[in-house]
Image 1 (cartoon, one colour):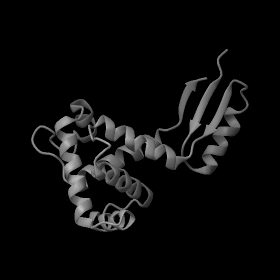
Image 2: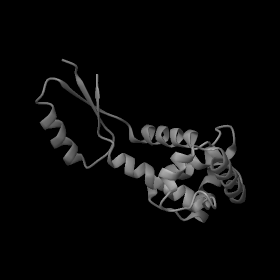
Image 3: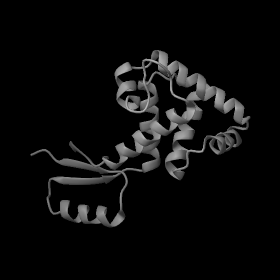
Length: 157
């Protein structure tokens, strides 16, 4: 019989402990905890690639950092966000804003339309107008947060 591996990314420690205790009673189950920061960055970069944002432009890196900061702080005030990112990358907040806007424009023109509709479909009319920086960053962050909530996955070993 194949061994089942369960990945646990985040959650209430008490609930995870109960889940681990319950599942470990079965010899065919292995539980592996994954670092949430590594997983978040991987999810963000995969999502951006699928949305058509090229990794060689500055806006790509700034979006990754912005989404990480939003997820970690649950703060989406873009002015503060731009200042924080500008400080990290030793640049101006206006450069951060315009680089992110350019990356969004590329994404909107080149990205997988089905994925764009599935992520932004409820909040933005993808056929008419691209989202603002705030809408794009907030929606990506919410998408990733919701994916993390469902991040207990079961794979056959």
